[in-house]
Image (cartoon, rainbow, N blue to C red; front, side):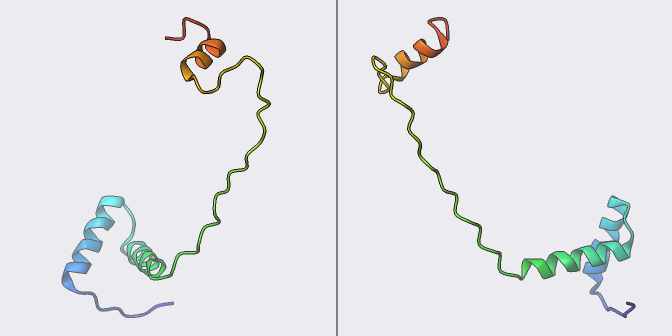
Length: 81
């Protein structure tokens, strides 16, 4: 669709400058900027809540899960540092 659009001088200058910098046509720049502006005005769709599901780890006898240092040493060995 063709239409006549009157741009303010500063807007036209910024569009021309960005067009030259990006190598895109003036028309592409105007359309892209209009699309982004129209999308910015829309309310964002709420994202689904992230849910963490717990699962049993199967506690092993003799392992102290409260002492992280000892636990890492058991898993990775004494030379983990």
